[in-house]
Length: 287
Length: 232
Image (tube, one colour):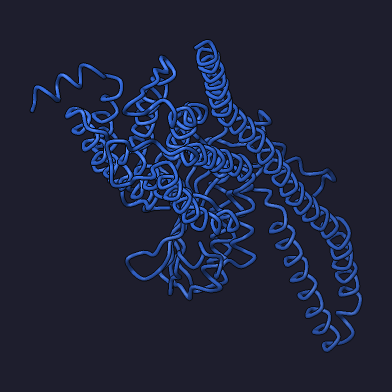
């Protein structure tokens, strides 16, 4: 009888120990899993920030390089071309009276030099969007489309939104500008369009850039799957990744395509007033 | 007849309660459409067979007839269906490949155990609970559950275990079999028609944890989303 009682107690203790172990295992799995997930989340966040930093640095380097080339063009080649023009003017005065043929060659040379100066000036401005930093997005986009319309049989409309767009941080403005440039260039190169509509909208949360064309269009799903994603579209994605933005491609009713870019509004601007970007100043772009 | 049922229900409330509680996860499986998942389909089959056998056992117990043959048969059905659930959940091919052969071997062992413990199989009156099969079942199920938990921790594919239905099912199984593993060998000696040995509180523990495990199954099923399952 006593043995039976002892056996009962032994079984009871064993069962309780087993149950405690079961409770412990369940709790352990729950807490360990949660902890490991938090660690993984932190790690992926660090990796994401690191790749974003790398991307940011790459784009900063690109902008710095553009500025350097623009400065070299302006300071060195531009100055030399101006001096050449001046010398040619002086030379033209001395040979102008002797020969009609020489005068013709001189005028042709002068006009070529002037044309080269204009080209250098244009390339310099394209490399560094000085209007963007001085006057803001609306003016910069306006200037860009006016220049484009001059050389192409293309109608480009721009709607800057109902209210005046307040100045944003240098990085945001440059990102929107470069994306707009890429989207418009894509439409001209690949879409065979005759009309491009650009609109800029802003609310409390986002700045929206919409670029639509009436061209041949493309399959947005193919872009999503990466089949159509060339360097240009990848560049857009990269620039947007840095500012936490997003882009959506869709087909329009008239057969063309629309790209809608949304960039979150940053409440505090990095600089109270954007530093003017000018080819005369040799400094690193601080994006 | 109804009086007999009611009086037995009152006489052994804790042993009769799991029969009633089994209906709850069953209803929830249909309500949440959890049967679309093969794992929960097997759980549904188990719950249906358990309910049927429990009802037969309840009826026989109320009639004062030995019902241990059904208890023994339920061991085979229970292990086959519950271990089958793990077949769909394990990612390791090695473990998957073992589940079916082990279930077959276990079934053979259980039938041998039934025959070994009951020399006169025709005489149901003196039928006894198996000697080894219940303990082996508990060991195997605890092993499978712990192995599954290990895989879950290792793979890190489930962001929140508290909303993962099968985690609750596994927790219920682990608790139930942990409560049974030490008591199961004693049941062979205690549960005899002619010479019943009173195990006291020990006898009550598996019933309590059977109810708890059924409630945990119900919690798990209530988290099941057929739409989410279809998407993944």
